[in-house]
Amino acid sequence: MKKVLFLALAAVSFSFASCDSKTENAQENAADNVEAAGEQKADAMEEQADAVRDSADAKADVMEDAADVNNPSQATPAPAEGATTK
Image (cartoon, rainbow, N blue to C red; front, side, top):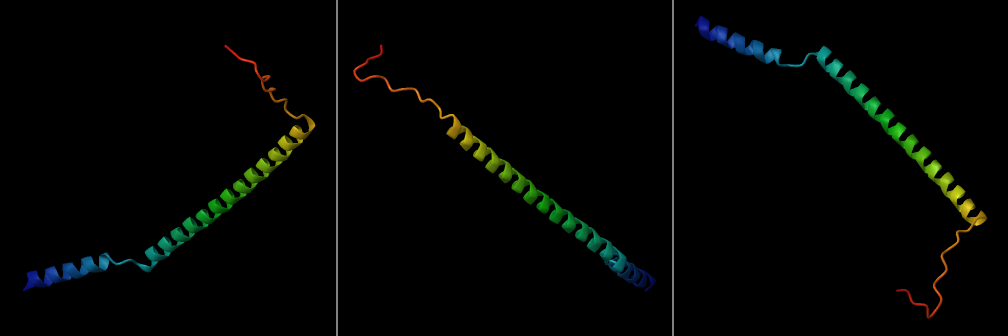
């Protein structure tokens, strides 16, 4: 009878030991909150980087367009009709 009672007590002890405590749950929630905040910050930084990249691309396009207007490229003239190349 003592063995059965001891085994039952041991089984109950293990089942209570496997339960999360309030402190453990609070720490896990705090870690989840830190992770979520980090993800939000990273997302915001990525959006800011995209905006900077788009602004730089737009400025480069304007500069290239201005260069084309001020100095149009000289296309290679087409060969004269009837000219043959060997």
